[in-house]
Length: 188
Image (tube, rainbow, N blue to C red; front, top):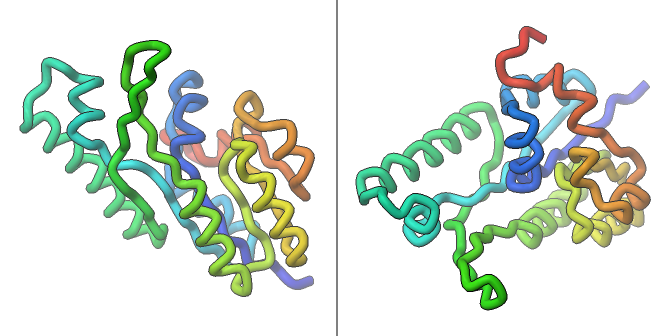
């Protein structure tokens, strides 16, 4: 039986709130190993923002420039680690948007377009496209992958999964169901 080639597209921000609430982190080596054990060939794309000065000082008003430099370096060092594990990392500075209804700044770093372009640009190279996000904005991408005869899989936390995205995928993997295989600090 032919093993399939999978491309895994990870919208890191989409996992953030679930992981924070659950109190655990992903071990990205184990994450890669988990999918390498299922598919013959894998490629991993990772999307996440880099702290910007405005975002950092909004969140840490008593901090100073060396604190910001340290936080930014920590994130960039993490990206270097991911690259050493053969992840293709896409990043950009976190943006700042004023919310006039609340009188506060919100911080955004959306990668929907970049993730979609990578999925489409590489479509001839994989059999399975795994979208690691529960964001309903990816319904159109999932449907497109299926139209192109690709298996379209969604990996997301159950509580953060759009019903429309869940309904459109060929398969859904719940982050909670695989956490023992990918959790930082576990022996599996």
